[in-house]
Image 1 (cartoon, rainbow, N blue to C red):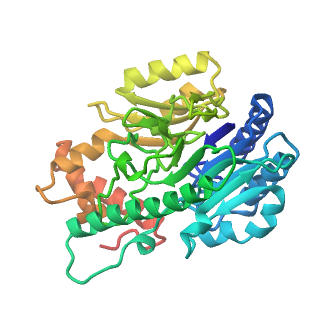
Image 2 (image 1 turned 135 degrees about the vertical axis):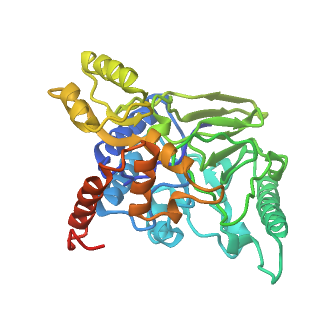
Length: 411
């Protein structure tokens, strides 16, 4: 069996206001070609097909067109489970129709765990070739009963116990079904969860799964007998505690500038008789380069000139960390980037933020300050002379008032 494991497509996701449909379409085209070239038998999508629970029409179109395309390919089955970004009911709505295309969808957790056990048969011979424990993202209400007065530790413990019990029930049912089949087909499980020790990166958009809890599960929640566990949720491709059989495929596209330059891949899994496992990770092409440029002005302009000289078309996040106050930072950037294919999507002055926060009390954050408080802290931090402050305050109030369409002289 050749199985392609992928997850976290996040179709419809934007990056600082920019639509990314062309990237998603290019990825799905590449994925369809890979499936044909590699002779993939089963595609597994381990959650977060869409970025929101109400995906746009265009995002839906990309999804359904891709599934229709696979119906005419060598791929005999597609298994899709919901992630925490997906709407379970939305994914489940066309489930019966998609079965005609051999697309098996598990959005919401079924009332009967047996409904999460899928036996995939060869369309010509009718023999069972793979047993799938298709477990979607397990929401708090699916696995835990809330009790009054419970502590955070109690909540975490119950969450982990609930996840463990759910997998145990589903795998036990799958083992019974497999025992009744000829040939002892391999068994695979899916999951959309956060394992202990899992790696993330800043700005990747990975959310905590359970509000108010730090429940990260260990690989021991997956019962023995599974030949492969296809995980989703974490965007960095990785094994779990060094096991080749328990893996995150990672997101196929960088979801934020924290993933800029990170190699993206999918998992091509070959399962043979006797449980022999081989995993390759074909690298996903970069369809839209991202670059994070940070440092003082000298470092930033040097790096930007290198990108311009290379004719890069990257989207940029620029983080200024210099000591000097640069009032015309945007104008300087525009001058360097004029005529290039580079585009700044985000400009962040980290030094100003650090300086403002340096004036805060131990328990004070930016959320505790209004816009005028922040400005006053900046005046103090930059040691602006008292004689200049009245005119600067007036100009600042005029700017803030203009943004709010109010009286510029109002206190």
